[in-house]
Length: 294
Image (tube, rainbow, N blue to C red; front, side, top):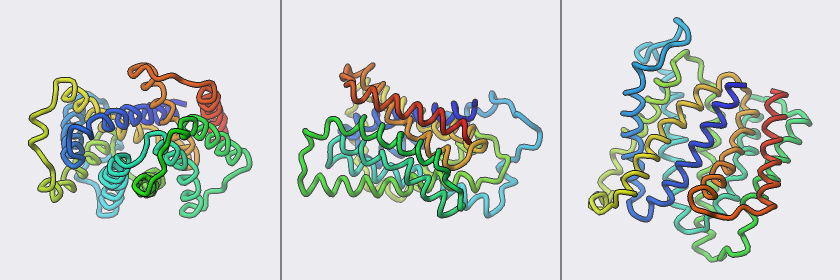
């Protein structure tokens, strides 16, 4: 149960990340935003290492990783970090938040389909029913505000970019099951952020760094918050992903829109409709019952 809670916390942190990044992208270039996020995230996790105790003595060290381990870590990092964020933040500029939320609702189903293709992991009728309830719940949460969506050529391009972003994101969750090292979660999370920070270096020449000097105090605070969130996502996900199946992990990703909805209600004063409330209940039930059945 603790592993499921860790995965849910990781998705809640992602809600913070998306909400904050959406605010910052209008004040700062995407490349600069992501590079700062990954660097600060790496430093935060590096500072946490001495204070996090080892659970067992068989845990690996970074120096003990072989080429296969490094390849898996690099692919994971780039899928969930640079590739997903560049596509998501690029696409959301051309479409509405409601449509972006609806497209990201396909993530749980996409993860479970990829798990079946790659691992041949059997999808039971009960698990399929949980996926169906989660998908209906996600559509209920995100689809209620689509009536105001302006369908234009530019918005369709944005929608396609966001859908493409779901592919590397789904691959990250599936590839997590290839992880066969005993590397502590905090070290894995540190490497994820560091790999992305290094991978972003060739793109830094295209960033407008002068925008950084013009940020308000609130914007700097949000920037720090999303950077810490970037670190915590990997940390909590690695703490929980080894103990659950890929299909269950995919189901838990449905918790992310709930956290985004909750934060919008608490901090932005947005109204939650009855349909969104029912959708939230369906998602929570699908996660609880799906987790119990493994």
